[in-house]
Length: 285
Image (cartoon, rainbow, N blue to C red):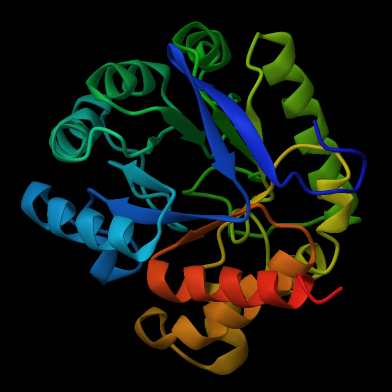
């Protein structure tokens, strides 16, 4: 574990039966095996996923995140079978083509997580931090893979109805500290924290949270941020997701200065360049 308030520079993650060194800051590329994710360019079938994954890996992605159910605001819950039907063929194809790539399954369901890891995924990214499926923590511990716990107020369907906080940074940090402890108590050694930008938060909440990320990094676990092309950019700039890359890069830069360890993005090359430039500045200290 890193010292209090100091973001980790690397981690030796247990991924099934091996230890893998992961260096931070790292970039996670997004692949959505869904028909309705908010950024259309990230929606993929198997063939498109293979092409996009190859490009992302060549551009420097350290991991790829595959989801079979949209979690955009207002999205309806889909059947577990449909989620599996969308995500599993993509993971199987990616693992066959890129066997050394670290694949993450984006799901809050333990059955999906188990089947995805059996198919080649080596990480679980859970928007509910184990609160929507009581079997998730035990399943991840048994599989022996890293686990991303995210803060969300409500569910994807309801989260943006009327989110309220007395102190968003304090409440999100407290929730993540609880879920971190729960995950570690369940036997998961490698836990990543995600503040959940846009998940049950207004634009004002999101910027307050971004400005206070050091409070979460003080928990001592790697911090993942998902800011890519989100509403918090578009509401301020009057843009749409398809033209929000510049705003994404600005916010990713701020997040890196505040201790982010992983950038979850649609655009890998630009995020890798962002990391490289921020690290070059740090080398001058």
